[in-house]
Length: 124
Figure 1: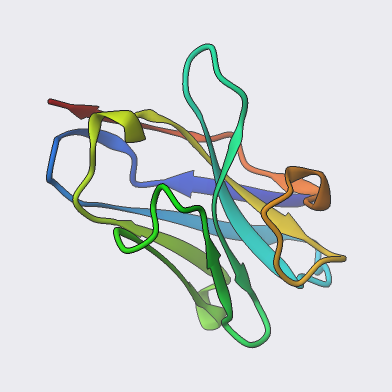
Figure 2 (figure 1 turned 90 degrees about the horizontal axis):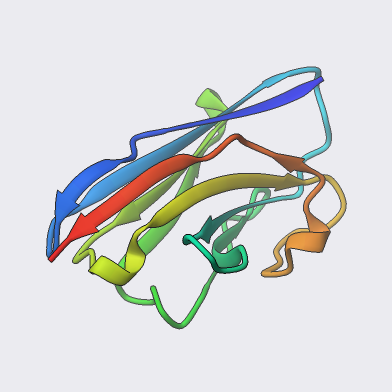
């Protein structure tokens, strides 16, 4: 059983920063890529950022490019999402995901493992 546990969410004001963490545990699995997605109330889950676990290559949604940074720590089996200059429209539940088959992708269908999510709320 593979587990992904997110942490770091909270309530902040517009312009503030937050760092989300996603720790992987459980049985060893071949991990090629990891990603962050988010889901706002009444909306579909959307792609935020992805990272190639092996070479560190990254990919971002246009809406967060230049404000968010995804990075990993292999020793800690953890992927992070540094979120700067937060906006009210960034309010959502943020989910971590891992893919055993795809190195980097913005398509949620490519991810086999998902965390439970962490709430990020940004007030204006």
